[in-house]
Image (cartoon, rainbow, N blue to C red):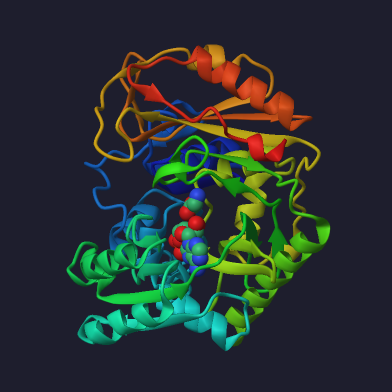
Length: 431
Ligand code: AMP
Ligand code: GLY
């Protein structure tokens, strides 16, 4: 079988997905909409420009593109198109999709839905209270009763910025006001106030096809912009996997929770085909779920996929068609993975773009190093330029974390663009 794949997205996650797919002998062509400077340089791959497909969150436009271009599998990277129902529209024209439909995507698209779902199915999570914008007074009274620390969440998608872990009541009141005053638009019309959990965080991503659940190794993101986990939250400044502090019992508990969630979705008649991402807090009372994502994590994917030893297209296609149980997914679990994000000066605030980047090939010449592009573009002459806040994900696999970290930073030091910044402490917690 020789297949054409359409990948939706433009980040480091999508570059890692495309690179793994391109290695499959079953894949003839990969179209990426809109893609980035990295996907543009992969074998068998072409970026779909906005003049051909302008709205990569439009269910109708993507279904139409898939039919017109003989696509055999659609892979949806980011959450917004999933929440918008792109997977449903593509399935409706008979093309398999890796990614859940709109009803399952509510697990990420609505914090209230996710919390109510967890409570219905006895999934361990923190206590919470939900308020609509008309219940402002009740919401503030609840805050006073709970005190700080406390967590305030805009219900809808807010590009990772809708959550405030408030250490003081003043901070909590300000976050609540911002939500109700429209900082996140309609996403903040409903607010979830949660009890604050303490502990290290750990994520477990699983392939789910409705019945079968295949978990990947645990991983740990670095959300804060500054070294030592300081400064504002970002989309993620680096990641490592596996997570040595997670023992087999704890990992088993998290995997069991994910299996229970998959069964619970099936019980509610919600079909799930794609990756389900469980974000856990490892509390003294055991792992508790902080959030679900209905897709591959970014940058988690960039350290998980390079370890895959079996055919990625086969796995994705099997998952999309409900045949995961018939497929083997094997990972090199003995290898340690580290990915360092190189960002533009100013990120997560405002930053410059269009700055030329050098040294990526030199970096990839180091053993075990792969560089995934996030916010980049590629000129006709091959020059790669910055085009976003998070620019590159410098990833290494090595037999030990010490070596993986050493090689990752050696690679980072070979890459140069004006205003480049990154954290020097990615992976230290694994040592
Ligand atoms: P979420 O998008 O819901 O995962 O929230 C983003 C981040 O906020 C998480 O990765 C945690 O660091 C933090 N967070 C969310 N919920 C809680 C909670 N109940 N207690 C403590 N921290 C939380
Ligand atoms: N790295 C966290 C996420 O993908 O949401």
